[in-house]
Image 1 (cartoon, rainbow, N blue to C red):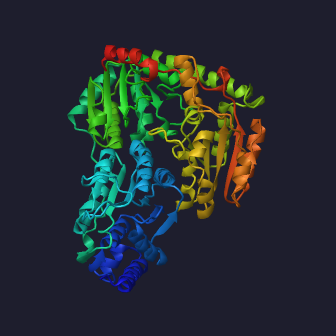
Image 2 (cartoon, rainbow, N blue to C red; image 1 turned 90 degrees about the vertical axis):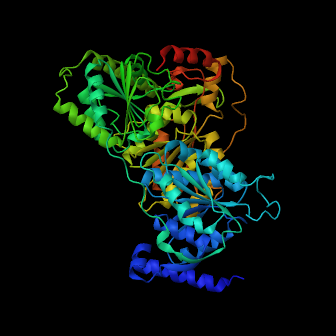
Image 3 (cartoon, rainbow, N blue to C red; image 1 turned 30 degrees about the horizontal axis):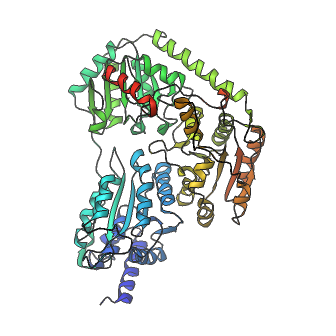
Length: 629
């Protein structure tokens, strides 16, 4: 029988040793933390995560995670970890994802068995799609099969949760406590992968969590992440230079994997006489107003971005995984004769046919490619080329198109029975305000997101975060919680549609509880406007994508004592005043902004690309087969 008092005392002693030494390795080296210990599986896991610099835990405890909770209680009491209980597991995942994205800090989401784990699984689509490493500790059914456990997946097969989570990504079920080191190594390789980070699901049977591992060697807990690759293989550079030299119309598609290589990309643009088409994931990697930035492309792309894609004869793809919207369901480059694909992931690098796949570290590969181009004196025109001039004209046309919408900030809306702000005008005012006030902006899924990534004018990375990988409704509002988890304070601004906000409104409570600093700006049109627009374009009718229920969001926010609800008004001036008022408030606030939704083209940013959805599929697929890229 376990002596819980002794276990708790020894846990506290280990935690104090780590605290006093300034870290687990320092305590081991000093001998104040004994290398061998009789230790429960749950404590071994927590120590293993601490050794990997994971000290932030958030989620919801249940009967499937009480032992993990007890370990965290003791270690938090000694100042080693911090635990943030929240009101929904999906919210926890979004906050952990945003924390890793904005600050680089790792976090672990914990859940009980059953519905809580399923909520976390759904939320993990975001870090999985966007390449962000997040740890998961998930309660699971017992290993002795004494009968159905409450909230397990019903059935008589073994390891059903492992099968389910394993389909989503990397998962490990700790049936045998002594395998904890291997499990943590696999998790470390996933969460800190040099090119394709993602969620790691560690499934913890309820009966193995409290099991004692005798004489466990704490140095078996892994700590070193997998190292990056070097540049691509030498022989590939000659082929790449040959293609760049021969091309007349170079487009460089910049995906999320290119983070950290902005300077190299700008240099390659000049050397290749290329133009850039960017992903919403890396807003600011090239300054918005750079003369070679054609901005976003794809099914929700800009006039200039899509023109560059349509007309280019050479595609240089950098860190992109080619989501359907980003390359118009593989029809976005109809005139491209060859692809140079620079990526650390084999599958992404070989996505297209007619490809020189340069598999290696993206930044190192770009540096080497640029040096070879410079040494070889690649003959690109010193004066403005026809290609560059044509693309600049399209970019100027796109800028005028945008300005027309900003010049008409209000339109009459039948739902509101008055003139209200358009989404482009509201988003432009908010994004300009955010840059001026050094706020970190998060954009939620839907029409807000699609309009937003065509409007933001970032000049550097880290100003705007748009979760386009999974396009998860409720992400932006939940991401505000990351401001409370970060070691470096920042002010968060979430731009969310009314539908997305109501997916995760508990941020008003959890943000207040944990000291979040930020504002949720609810752009309210009582519709799923992105889908309404798609329905109208495809079928000429709108169906089941709106409602008639009016919600007083200001009153809803003020109902949570300590949250400040503000009405944003009907003009850009009133919205800016509301944002100033929110920023001056010490805590979390919500601004309600009624916005236009309707047929007037000045009410949105438009759509200029193709997409393999609905009744467009036949045409789009036929074109893809014809192009054969």
